[in-house]
Image (cartoon, rainbow over all chains, first blue to last red; front, top):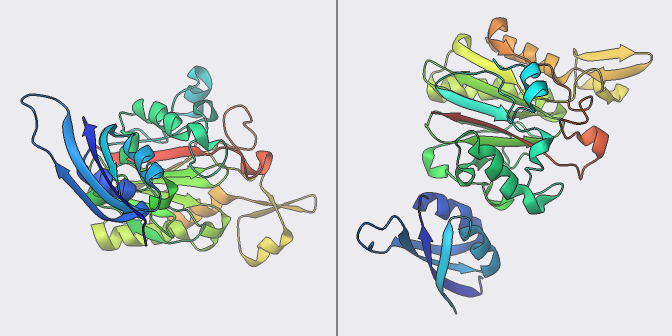
Length: 75
Length: 251
């Protein structure tokens, strides 16, 4: 049973949602990734990511390869 | 085809076994550092991958990699697999030693130190494959299994296939136990009472038996054991040595 419910915003430029999902899939369950409405012509896209995991650190390490992590909530 | 000379002259960033407009392939040399997330100095591996793959215009986060268990299972990879194994070994395709795809812009990678990386390219379909052939995989005829799956899934014809060998330990240096006679009926060379395995030679025969034309097999003949300053070698450096990356992608 995965201990932590982790939710955060990931700001990305050029990555595909499927790729991010494939990268963290093994480290948890109930993965949901939703794209948040963009701000005008901004190149960056914001994703809201949820995962239940034993190891939030590895999820953050991997997601940091795709962009900037913001607004982290861990329950 | 880019030859060994090119590698020697410019410390070429990637050893391309064959050069085609429709796809890109290459193997890093040890100057680029360790590429494995499991063996050797793993701390810098992602940065090393990023640095090397950028030269080939490949996003390191998109790689699809295999678990590499020295078996002979082959997986067909599709675009929804993008990124599996790119950032952690746990997400690599489990139980697999060879990857095939006909999807474009989907980079396949394997990691090796002495094992033989085999690139496969079907210009007609088009489709690509990448095989990790150590002695165990070779014993199980992994390259033939990869070609069988290309025939089945992609309708590839072996006579259309181009095959290329990356750097590996060669028959000059690959000393093995006499017991290997049980595993291989050919490809064992006896010299002064010792046995040497011709991994590339055996795979060449397996390719030809599968219908690949001799003239379509490109073998730069590079030995990872001999070339101390260019490549990592498991036999020379032990299990904790770094690994090179071999990568192939359809454009």
